[in-house]
Image (cartoon, rainbow, N blue to C red):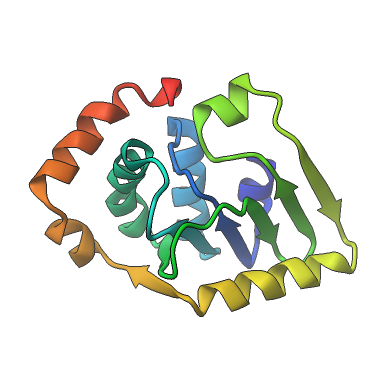
Length: 160
């Protein structure tokens, strides 16, 4: 949350799972509203269908406030990285879901003003070239069954 609230220019995230609590959702929305370039890369082909349909329930809420969402089209992406303003980065096993953030003892390296942050951002940009940008219209065209399943499963998000 500190990285999200402290971002001035950009916040770039790569994660295979996007199951947000209210506070994290709002932090992303506020960052985008204040002009931060917030981009999230998700897999286009999931490994867990139920986590993916829940993640999609957040897309419209994020997109409407200016967050940009991309899906990695070659397949599943399992990277977990957070980079902001060429100053901070986190790379590790931390997913953007309740269990990873609050229950499990996930591992990650936090970096601050070190040269390798440029390499992490460069990798992010190279990955972004293999992604398709998701729009609000894409969300509206989603099958009703996927939307319904996502909304029902979102009730159980803390358990996922």
